[in-house]
Image (cartoon, rainbow, N blue to C red; front, side, top):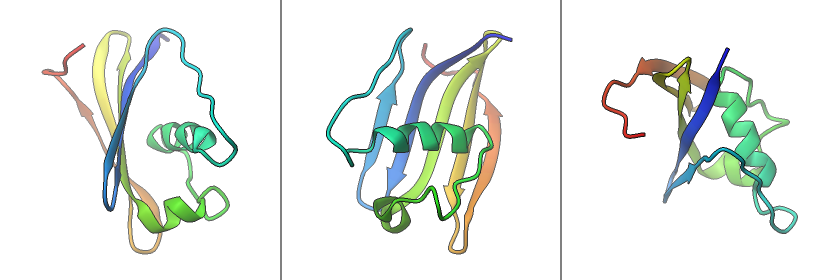
Length: 101
């Protein structure tokens, strides 16, 4: 199966961040800068669990939702997930016909 990540949009209480993916990506920075959090949020959008052990203090207080745009076998999709007052849960899957690629 061919899966290609396009971007991830992360909504926080006071900001939105977008990371565009290309053929090869690497993240670098100081310890605590959020490199592992990017991978955790990608996993979360793909159906993984973002439990208390995965939630950094910043995520616990600021994270609202994330949306991962991707192509699966050339079909564009958007996977969204959000934090609820009691836990993190998955919102939905949407095929995107007007996604810019």
